[in-house]
Image (cartoon, rainbow over all chains, first blue to last red; front, side, top):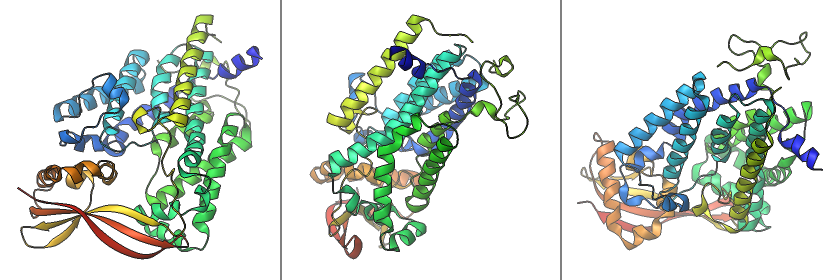
Length: 287
Length: 146
C-alpha cells in the first residue's frame, strides 16, 4: 500500500511538461495581475478599506499603497519573465510564488475573497521544486497542481451543502447570479424553463464527482477535461465569471510534452500514435 | 531517469499533506479569513425559489444636477461591488467612508461631472418560482460629498 501511494504521488513525468506548464503559468501572471486581481491597483487608492485576512495579519503585511503595488508588480513580473525564459527557475520561481501570494492576499483583503486562485498559487509554489530535479519531482509537482484543481471543484460542492444546505440544487442561486451580473446569453438561458435548475444539479454532481479526474486516463480524461472547459466557457458567457487562473491549471492533466512548441519538438511515432516521451533525453527542458 | 532521495520525498509528502490538512480544516470549519485555505464559498448559499435577490447599487447626484447610477467597479470608484457589500455595515455606521469613493471617482474619471451626493441602495428582486417577479430599490446610506 505504501508502495502504491508512493508510485501515485511520484509517478515520473517528463521535465518538458513542467517546463511548458511553467511558461503558461508565468506568462499568464501579467494578465492576471492587470485584470483578474487588478482590484489591487484600486486598493492602493483606498487605504481605509484594508481588512487583512488572517495570514496577512499574522505576517503584519502592510496594505496596498501606490509605491508598494508598483514595486510588487515589477518584482513579480520581472521574476516571472526570468523564470518563463528558463533562467534561475528555482530562485526566480520562489520570488514569483511569494510575491504573487502577497499580491493575492492584498486582492482578498478588502472585503471580498475570491476562490479561483488555489490551483494557480499551488502551481507557483510547486513548479520551482521541479526545476532540474528529475522526473519524480516533476511528477509530484504535476500531481499537486492536479489535486489543487480537483480540490477547488470538490470543496466547492462541500461548501454549497455546508452553507447552502441540501436545498441548494433546488434553489434559485443561478438566477441570483444572472440577475446580478447576467449577460444577454445568461438572460437567454435563464428564460428557458428549467435550464438553471438542471444547471445547478449538473454543477453540484460534477463537482462532487471531480476526484475521478485524478484516476481517469486517455479519452475518458480528455472528455472530462472538455466538460470542465465547456462549463467554464458557458459560465463566462452567462455571467462573465471565467475562472481563468484555475482553467489554465487544467493543463496539468494534459501530456503537454507532446505539444510541438519551440524548437525542440517531442519526437514520436507516426501520426495518430502517441509519442513515447518518458525518459526521452531529447525532450529535456530548455535551460 | 533521475529519482528523488528519501528526504526529497518525505518533505514533499509532508508539505502536500499539510496543505491538504489546512484546506480540509478551512473547508469544514473555517471562513474566508483563512484565505487561501478557506472554504470554496462561491455561490455556496441557497436562494429559496420564492426568495429575494439583493444587490447594492450606487446612485449619485452630479454638479450638473443629474441623477446617475455609478457602476461599483474599481475603474469608477476604486472598489468592487462585492467589496462594498462585504463592508456594508461599516459604511452604514460611518457614511463618511463614502467620501473616499467620491474622491476615487474624481481621480480616476476626471472628465466626468463631479459627484455631489452618493446614495447606496439595495435593489431587491422578488422571485416567484425561481423567476424575477418585481423589483424595488431601498436606500441604505447616503453622503453629501465634501
